[in-house]
Image (cartoon, rainbow, N blue to C red; front, side):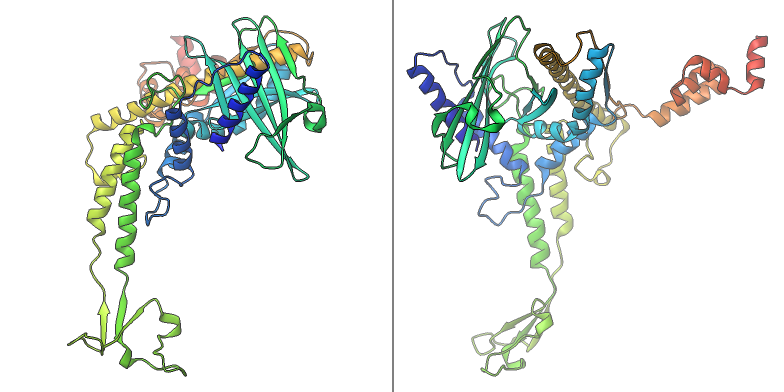
Length: 461
């Protein structure tokens, strides 16, 4: 589908050029397009090395993206406060937050995502657009997305309607263009029609220029890691982009393990002469044990073979799983995950220093993703605020946005609480400080929680 979207955008650009209109340039080269398509197929367990081959997927790409999304968003808290405008924005934002873990997982898999707000029914909705569903056509020198093409399709009455929406920011003004097309085939763009012909698009303006804005009216959440596939591309890469060959090796090893178990299944080899015959004279295996029995024809050259023989070879699972586990450890390192996230930690004697370094590597990567997510959400809120101004959806006013991310990946809260309690008990710190941290209360409330004997003793001091 991604290739079709690219093809449609190129066709639209050619039509605009023929009409003497200004057009942008698709900044995705063929190499980047191929990798985005590969990452999507890997995430969906349809990697090219699995297609048409006797190879099973170990499900690693989805597991990696899911785990990093979980670590990024676990116990995340964010809120918009400060005014009536803030209350309106918060009502929209509150519907976005519960969806973030799933959407961050898709972004981790494909390298990024766009959060696109739009006005609907007197309020604002937010659309999440995955990396293989939009076409970037402009970045500034800092790598910030300044122009993009979006595609939406509707099927109705045997016809396919496609809308191409263009956003371009020139440093001061943002231009938004909508064009609709009709076709009888899903893969074809077709001919241009009026937006009013489709009820869902009837209220959209064909051309809109929004002046004096700080940027485009959407936000781009980019996975913050180097693009080792195309160093000149500002586009984000998948969290497992550095482990593609390792994931292929893991899938192949996983298939070997499955084949070892299948090939080692208990079986009873029995001569046809020892089996009952059907009405047609054919030898019959026991109905409920067809998988257990395997027949052979004693008359066709199998000399010295007994009438019945049990097939039960030893399973070499230990060495196969050890090899699989070593591949998983390399994948963990390549993807910024702590050892033991995918691999079996019991198979390795690890020092305390190795554990700390492993967690720090994962913590650093997750912290980078959290920072990128926070920046994208701040841009999303800014775009929502601009839409609220343009459509007078709420009283103008300032707003404040707060963010809180969980740090338990590197900080052992239970151990720190235990240490702090010991320090409070021994008198190294005030007991109120321990209670404030332990229960998340203020200093006055912490004092009220202390026994009267403790307050009296501190008063005497």
